[in-house]
Image (cartoon, rainbow, N blue to C red; front, side):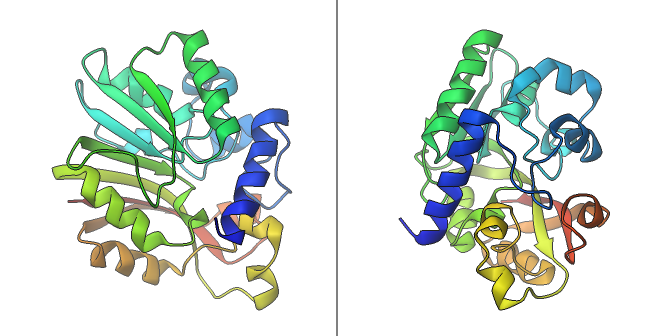
Length: 244
């Protein structure tokens, strides 16, 4: 495992077991307020309860055209918030699979699923750079402020394309940079775990998705998140749909 993955895994293991937020200026602080600011409704947050850890930078299920009977994969499912919201949309004929490489997060999400009676949701311990999912088996992929944490984003999008059915769609909320970071910022452990140090420049990110074989459309851009959560670092939350 790379040093970056160890840093991320350690940080999110701590959040899963203690709800310890990352520092102010990362993806996690004042959970419910942050979640409302990035697009979740009070009704949704009441539905998911403590599965909301305030770790996202958008609400991919709000944009995702998820239908009854769909198979949905969540890359970096955390406490399960987006999986549970997607589960309501796919119904009993569909299924949702959450992938996370932090055991404590998977354990926590499984506990939420059991308490909530979410029989159509499964959580699997796995790496989004090497998905434990069969080829052409998913209708929809969602991901919320996670791909920026992966050292090899080309592998992530390649794996996403592999597991999607022909015509399948990927709805992603992610942090992208609007200007380069300093070397010190790139090597700051808190910024590595906090969705910043590993982020790509916006245009490079979009180019990478296209080069991975997707047709890409930008759905929204949230620049205000920089001041609210990231101490003014030049970045934004980018919401895209990528179609296979």
